[in-house]
Amino acid sequence: MLALAAAFCLAAPVRSEETGKLKIIADPGVILVDDDSLECNGEAEVELEAGEHELRFFPYHTVDEWVHRYLVYPFTIGAAGQRTIDLTNRDIFTIRSDPQAAELLYRGRYLGLTPGDFLLLLGAGDSVVVKMDGYENKALQLDELHPAGTELFVSLERLIAQEVGLSDDLEAYQYRSPLRKLLSPDILLSLGSGAALLAVGAHFSQKADDYYDDYLGYLGTRAREDAYSKMRRFDRISKSTFLAGDAALGFFGYILVRRFIFPAEGSKRREPSHLSMKFTGRKVALSYKF
Image (cartoon, helix red, strand yellow):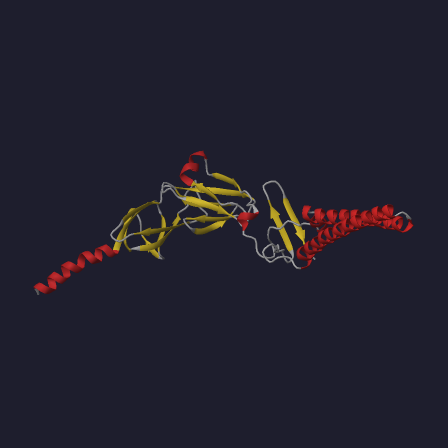
């Protein structure tokens, strides 16, 4: 018997730690805690297991008030914890937004869409989060806004592309025409220098031909040797210039092949397959790839 009594004494506090006490203050109405109805005549206390619960309150209509939306209040309670929920400290808030049909979240749960009237509790520091795809979330602090009235309006700001998280088919992309790629400095420099060197080589080649004609036409030995020497010099210069021009044009062709036919894997821009869009703080760019 002593052993049984000792076991009972040890088990009692363990059970008390598994439940918490909830105190509810309410005016006449229907109260449901986790689908269990509760009779409340001003104040009521109930024991609940530790964890998440949901309280719903249907206030009775009076002569000067008709609450057409009931209150849904999710809450948590700890083991051996105590919590008080004052259902008399409430009000009906009219929430509107621009754009409309924004989603409202109250204590982490779906509340409804804007515009609408909603019965909400005060004095608990709760907020209503207004969210919509493509727009920044806005939090409405009920206790701070209530002194100014129950008509709440929020204008949502659009997100920029870096924050939106675009899909593969719809992503930030800036079009660059082939003409702009051709006008890059390295392409213009290689093409221009190659053409100039070939022109200079052709000039020196013509000079060498002229001195060779003089060499054939002169009769004196000294004049012939001088003409032949100049012909050899200009011929060597023209060949060197032609080689440099060919190298410059070869580099030009290499750039064209690497940039337009076989672009480098690391520098290849991934283009959107169809529709692409780019948002910035000042403008929106939209393009479609056929």
